[in-house]
Length: 465
Picture 1 (cartoon, rainbow, N blue to C red):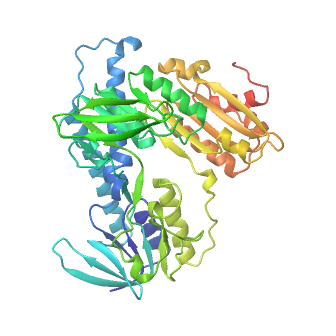
Picture 2 (picture 1 turned 180 degrees about the horizontal axis):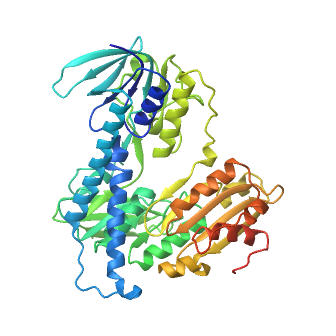
C-alpha cells in the first residue's frame, strides 16, 4: 500500500505529525508496536502526573488542620493511586485512537523497520511481515530509560520509571539515582506517601542540576525539609542486590568518602536513550551521532524523503518539543514555509511539589554569553495568593539584558509555576522588554503577579518587597 507519509511511532511527536499531515490533505499511516500515544501518554508524562496529583491530595488531607478542616485516620492507598494513574493513561490512549479515526489515519500495529526505496516493513506480534511504501517517512520512535553499566535495570530491585509507576507494593525505602525531572518527581511522590527516599546525584549542584543554581538550591532545601535525603556530587559505585535488601555504595566526589545505603528498591533515573536500534538506519546510511539521528532545521536526514523527530534527534527529550518538531516537519514536507524552532525558547517543567519551570538562559549561561544583566527576584513569601493557598515556598527569577531590556531567561519554583511559564515563552517570542512587562497589568491575587513584580524588582520599581 502506498501513502504520502508514514510515521513510525505514535508518541506526542508521531501522532501529532500524523494529524497535521492529514489536515494538510496527506494520506497518512502510523506504525506503532505497543500503544497509541507512546511512552508519554501510557508510561510517562500523563500517568506520572496522575500519581503526583494523588500524592498532592494526600498531602492536603494530611495537613487539613492547617486549613481549618478536621480529618481523621487518612491513609495512602498505593494500589488505588496506581490504578487511577493507569486509568488516566488508558483514557488518553483511547483518545488518540479516536483522533486517528477522526483524521482518517491508518494505524498499523507492529515493529517498523526502514527499507530502501522509502519502504517500511512492519512485523506484527505473530511474526508476520508486510511492506508499505510512502513518499516521505518520519521516524518518531522515542526513547527509553537510560541504563548505566553499574546500575543494570532488572525490573525487581533496580527499576526504571515505567516499573516505578506500576509496582505491586509500596516500598518502605528507595534510592533514586539521578535528580533530573524524572528523579525528583518520583522522589516527591514516594516520600509524600511514606517511603523513605534518598536521592543521589552525580553533579555538584544538587536537585534539578540543569536548572538555574538558585532554583536547584531552593528545591534541595525544600526537599530536605520534607525529609528526603539528598547526596549531591556523589556517584553510585555499586549496587548489591544479592540479599533481601539492596545495598547501594555511594562515593562523594570531593571527599572520596563512601557510604552504604540499605533500601528496598533502587530507581534509575539517569536520563533517556534513543530508540534507534534495529530500525534500519545502517542499511539506508542514515547518519547518527551517539545514537541520535542527525537532521537539519526541518528534520530532514541525509537520506532524501526520510525525516526524524523527537527524542531520537539532538535536543531536549520533551513531549512538547517532539510535537512542535512533528508539525514543522510535516508542514515543510507539504511545501509550506514554517519557521524553525528557537530551542532557546523551549520551556522546561518539573511537576514535583513545589513545581519547577524555566525557559531561556540561566544566570550563569547569560554571563558566559557576554550579557550584562539586570536580575529581578520575587519570593512567594510576599504573595497574597501563595499565603492564602497555604504554601509560600519558592520564587520567580527573571534575567534581563541590561542594554536592551530583552528577557533572557525565567526561572520559577512554586505552586502552579508550570502553568505560568507559558507567559514568559510568549513574552520572549514577541521580544517584549522588561519595562513593557512591568506595565502589563496582572490580576490580583494570583501567583502570576510574581512575574510582574520580579520584573519590577530588576528595575528598582518593585512595590511589594
